[in-house]
Amino acid sequence: MKQLFNKKRGDEGFTLIEMMIVIAIIGILATIVIRSFAFLASARDSKRISDIRTIQNYLELYYNAEGQYPSTATTWPGFQSEMKTAINVSIPSPTDPAYQYCYDASGTTSYILGAKLETNNTVLNQMSQSLINPPQPCGSYQCGTSTGSYIYCVSPQ
Image 1 (cartoon, rainbow, N blue to C red):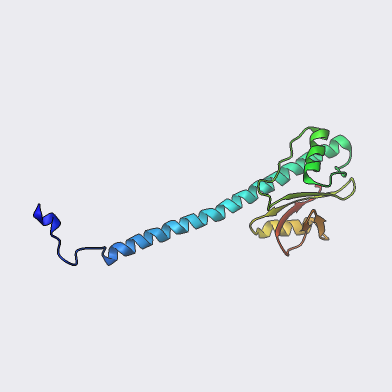
Image 2 (cartoon, rainbow, N blue to C red):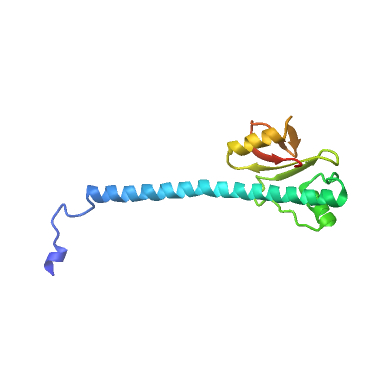
């Protein structure tokens, strides 16, 4: 029993190997956590793109029912209300106020629908630029350009 309490000087603390193993484990865990945040931003962008495509389908239903695209809505809540009244669908709202959706009617036969994204997606940027040419505003966003924020925009099919 006496041996448990009588340690020699120099037996305290951790060895260099033990410290290196702990640091390596912390580094691996930190890498996993940081990468998961990047995947979360990409997942939120996928949700925004899915919402825009769903809204685009609703706009085609509206066009078939009314013979024109909504042209009186100037705000997103106004657009949602007009779509709910006309064809009884619920238009999704963005979950993060920093990444809003926009709808801009160009008369009754055309529109620009867009969403601000968190991450750069070269393929979507090129697709938006080819669809929206020349660049056009959509709310506070500029669709069809490669400068500034990452904006995903669509127009009638």
